[in-house]
Image 1 (cartoon, rainbow, N blue to C red):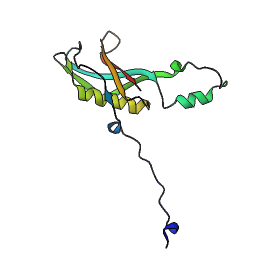
Image 2 (image 1 turned 90 degrees about the vertical axis):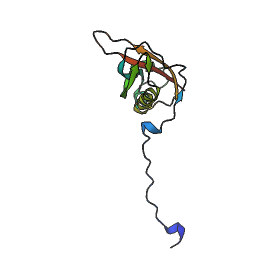
Image 3 (image 1 turned 60 degrees about the vertical axis):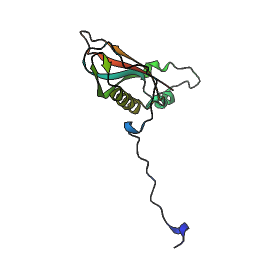
Image 4 (image 1 turned 180 degrees about the horizontal axis):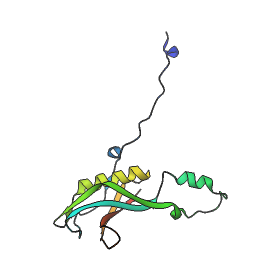
Length: 132
């Protein structure tokens, strides 16, 4: 049998996991005003998994669309621990990678993090900003 006659198995791609995502940490300090405890990380932004799907459904493809209507909350599975005014950087990075994996955003620069204080309607959490 010659090499041209060999039948190759179909090539299957494996989905990228959150751990495989490259992330550049642009945060200068891990100091925080959050009380000691564990907090989820969140971002409110465009769901890039469905961006093209929404765009294709538009009747007038030449119109400018405000894609903010397709924004949603993405929340990490990992919690970030805070002790004595400092958050755990490695868990923040892991949580950010989880969010990027969920939303399929191509940006890889963790630009900012801030603590959103709890109130009667929600628990406290860290809100991040990621850019490309």
